[in-house]
Length: 253
Image (cartoon, rainbow, N blue to C red; front, side, top):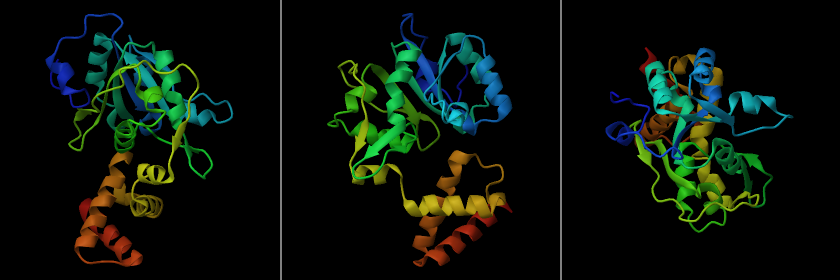
């Protein structure tokens, strides 16, 4: 198989695992895919799909939220040929668990329980978020989230794939679990509030600034522009936002 950007390079340099119980699973956020790409993904022969969220009260969460897609060697080759997953592909997971069990284990991480605040949905699988969660090795939920997983591959800063690192030796706990977070960790998982606010405002008011830019890259562009505003000595919110607007506008001209 030729080197493919959306598959970990290590997999492409090694033979496919001979053990039948060893599984490779893609975590894909459907809302970031074009409708045709979603259809092609579900119709790929050899792919087994399972949603992470099943809530009859909010059907859009299943329709547009994260799904697990277990692949075979043949179906991975087919997905590579399509090359349409883009930023919808959030992670690759190696484990020996059946896909339904893996989905059941990961599903509780979709809801965070921050100290002193009501529960809130959390895109725990985003690279910057999963890295911070993986680092919380002393948390009582760490084994419940990562136990039984051989390796979790997340997107690196160079758009390649990086392994999170060592996983818990113990199997995951069978009892239901919750992602309880301190206030400081919860805020850190959400990233810089200025970046979030500026990205939301500019996307709503000036969508042309992000023409042809996938959703996952928008905040990165805004963050880079805000950093440049800081280096330029701008302090006031309105000045910084105007600077970001002009900088992004120059990029699309």
